[in-house]
Length: 226
Image (cartoon, rainbow, N blue to C red):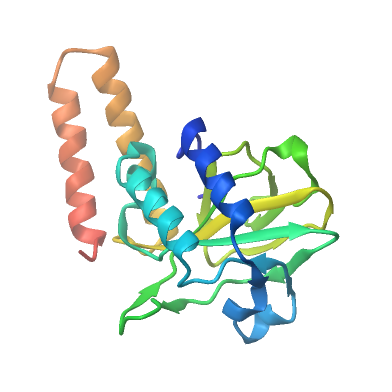
């Protein structure tokens, strides 16, 4: 499932993040690339342990914890601390698949990367190129979102970032380990949850909603690793 989640950050948060990112020190993005992706990756990145990445990462995690659409779609168990990248002057990221496991810096813990996420900070009209291209069984999707909006998609998908030929594309990227590792199962649960919310909005009669909610939780009980 590829899903756009609008307004993860509000205008004030985006403005603050932009100021922090403009003042930060950047390093080459290969510092966090795996063996395969290092050959395709050409961008700049905030150091993972730096104060800017920690501050903005905490802001993003707090926002996600209050975002009902994200929680419904991702069913998050663990979220990797957000990273930040910048593309400009023709930089791009060639076609690759994200690593299946990521070590959380400074800990002995790893997460399974079920879902990839990109949160945009630069307005789309401030740069040319930079589209995130995601390939799945339904075709090829091009993603370039307003500042503060986020896209999530299966981490198993082939994807790349097109060259930025004007301006700078600035974004946060990270991964989610879901309670439900299978994308098709997560999609069914998301569709069912959305239907339950719709039923609750259009009728005060509770029987159908209760039954649907029961089905949802029984499926979650069957599929989830909590």
